[in-house]
Length: 241
Image (tube, rainbow, N blue to C red; front, side, top):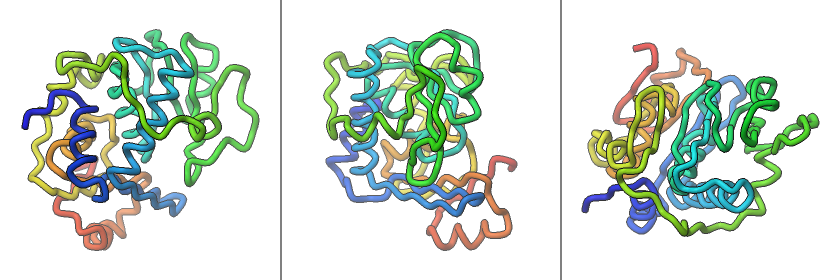
């Protein structure tokens, strides 16, 4: 079965085995651990996609800047953008986009710039900011819970639509899915950034090969081998290797 767009691939995995693990996230600096099944992932993606379309007026072909660190919400935002047909600009930059998504560190840079800024606190469990945000900046944790649990695009993307523009390289939906080369059912343990070429390939693999990824932020190298065994990783990818 040939799947040409990210939302089609996610929907296929949801039908095939919605209960399987899709994403596991560790932050060794805070002790946080999050695990999402395919079903939980699809729910977060639907809510975020609804926010983009219904609240932020993002349309197919618009661009969204995703400037987030290694975090479990980074793949969620990538999938949500692709679900509504928006192309992602990854990492920092000054090109104007319809929406900017950043963590706390990006607020001073983006709050006064073009496009609506959606800020993520990156606190455990997706918690809200504890301090007031600048006027006009949306706290993702405040605005996403009330969004619908399902999303149906009125103008869905095609395989030739851009999924990533700019760095690290442009990808269409079809090219992104074709980049997946993991063995079926692979469980990858990595500290690579989800928006790096290696990270994007891992996201794609989890959509077409039944793979799953264990993402680690601020990794404690002394516990790496134990974590690989604990999480039953079949492959390990270090960002400094």
